[in-house]
Image 1 (cartoon, rainbow, N blue to C red):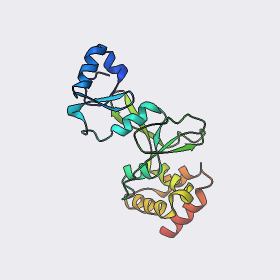
Image 2: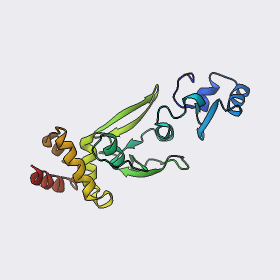
Image 3: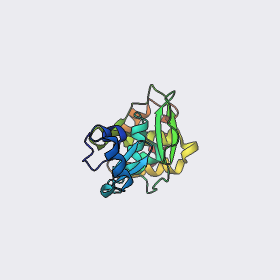
Image 4: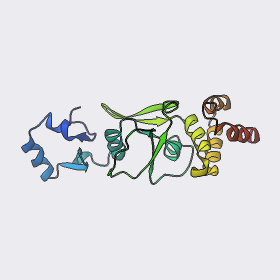
Length: 191
């Protein structure tokens, strides 16, 4: 990755293209901004992408995946704009601490972690996971005791209005026995 791009970059990226003295001089002059430990951005590009926090999360936790309310919001299925990022990692994986982004870590079963997992490109060489709309709805039903049943139903209604196919959703839900009965009952009522 070249640091001439407008995306956040790591200290290692900067050092690959300039010496320590030059880097420190640019940092002191305010031409380079420190976003978090080890993550920087050119001052004239700050705030342009809007995803600086996602860069930090992707850098520190490569398997991080936007889930639950964060994913539902990203897909436009709920009107809420979550204050904290719901980030899923496989159960047993290490969750980094002391990030500047407000995060709620969720640990999902490694056997189903990759089901419905896509990626959002944040820039050259950096991406973060995002669960599909179907997976996000299933997770909302699966974790409705924490997330609230209203959130799950609202997302389901929006998905159906957008042309979502119930058969696709039920196919995904079959992998999650805890979500399937509630989801299929709700679909029967709505359809």
